[in-house]
Amino acid sequence: AYLTQLPFKHCINLCKFRCGNSYLPAITGAFKGIERANRICDLCNQNERADEIHYLLRCDFFNNERRKYIKEDYIVHANSLSINKLLNSESVKELENLAIFLNIIMMKFK
Image (cartoon, rainbow, N blue to C red; front, side, top):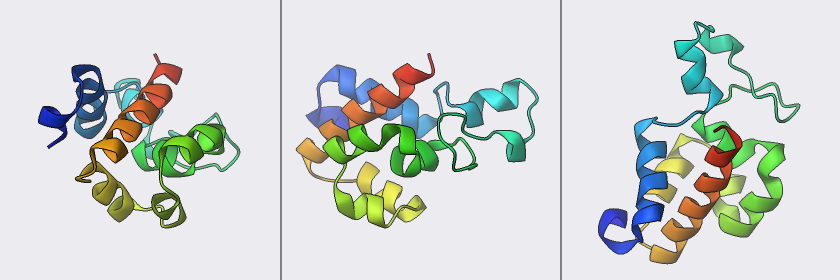
């Protein structure tokens, strides 16, 4: 639904994130020959894999922005089901906020 309900610039962020077309270390590490287990976030001290779930719901580096744009329910129950529910939200405002937050994350890795 976001493709028809959101401004084009927000659709791009959501599409890139959902398709794995970003510069997140979990993705770029594959092209650099870095083993999956060694693609760790260097923005925080959690020693977690630098993937979509980590940056969207867990990484301490983005805490302030996350609180601003993502509902607490998704953060408290941070897992792949939370991301699925968030990405499939029917709330235009929720999707717009998600797109803005994803842009913040992805700009960090360009």
